[in-house]
Length: 108
Length: 108
DNA sequence: TTCCATACCTAGCATAACTAGGTAATGACG
DNA sequence: CGTCATTACCTAGTTATGCTAGGTATGGAA
Image (tube, rainbow over all chains, first blue to last red; front, side, top):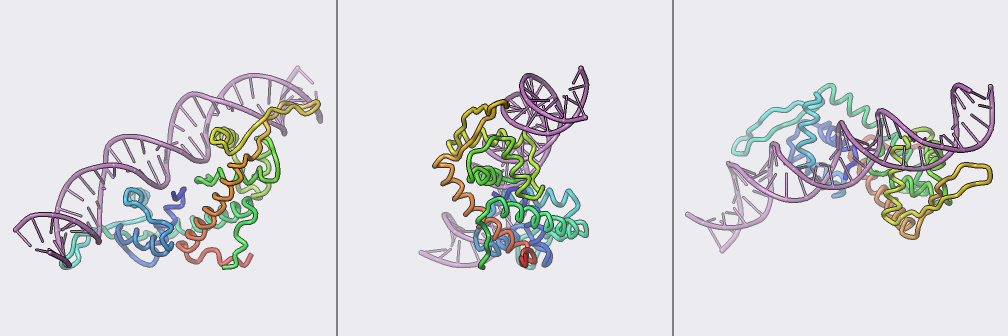
């Protein structure tokens, strides 16, 4: 359960460069050390939503001797949205930390 | 927008002792420095949900010369649930931090 | 007496994320 | 060759969450 922060995560995954859906899922899984093993039914619709919102653009690619893939890239609006989402996440997580008290003394 | 962490927040607000709905809203607002100014339509149903789940218990109280209030307390199961939710939040926020990269170097 | 703050409530909506299916192509394995 | 796992895409439908937008009622201040 990603509770509204999926968009930020997907946008962030594309910050390093274009990628296709399946790879995005793998990246998120790896970079979260398996915490977020997202079902395709979560990610694909999110990509469509973000594209419809103008935050991503996509193009079909067929690598030599491979299956076709839909490659997504961040648009300008997408980069801006990512910056906003990051700020929002900062405020949000800070507030939750404050409310949950003990949490997040952050030795690591 | 609380994205699934409302329960943890409400439970945490009751950790210090019993309180009624309206006061819980105020506490959350204050302790989050106004980040979470939750509408009643968010909190009351959540309290009912948590009580139905056995995590809270409630009793009507009428303070001398005051209006009746429904006081909520953490049950044993509620305390346990809170501990779980805290752990879940820790894992969750850590993972999001990792994915969003730059975020949360946390000097403050 | 009028208004604000306190204090409770709920029906109904929007949306997010997930479940659970489906389609194909590729390569490995026997 | 047939079968299976993996890659890679898709979507209809369910669920639950949190919110909007209303409503009731009391007490105190102006």
